Amino acid sequence: MKIRVESVGDVTIVFIDGNVLQENVPIFRVKLLELVEEGKVNIVLDMVASNYISSMCLATIVDVKKKLNELSGDLKLARVNKLVRNLLETTSLIKKVATFDDVDAAVKSFSKKDSA
Image 1 (cartoon, rainbow, N blue to C red):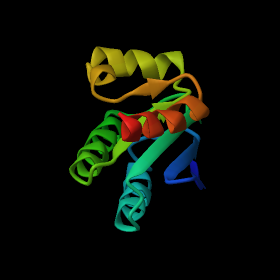
Image 2: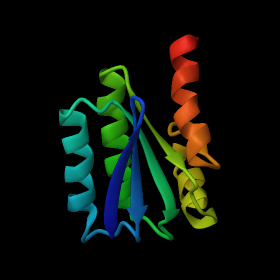
Image 3: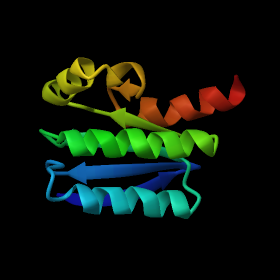
């Protein structure tokens, strides 16, 4: 798994290249928490190159989303594949974590929240 980070305005996009399995969840968690520490409170996870995520990855997403919500931010997912979407639906996390078909839509959704 490789992680690449880019910023678009006040939104941070985290590109995940590879599966997020139990053995690399700690790296994933540390990277997301570092971003939060740096004041990055609007995060989009681009999951297009992730075919599978573990339950520990889901727990990390929920934990980081909760931290961001407390800081008036949010975490959203973009370009999740069918397997990951099914996992989100099975665990009912699809209702708690917004998912988008593309990164641009996810990024734009933050500005809609600000103008509401």
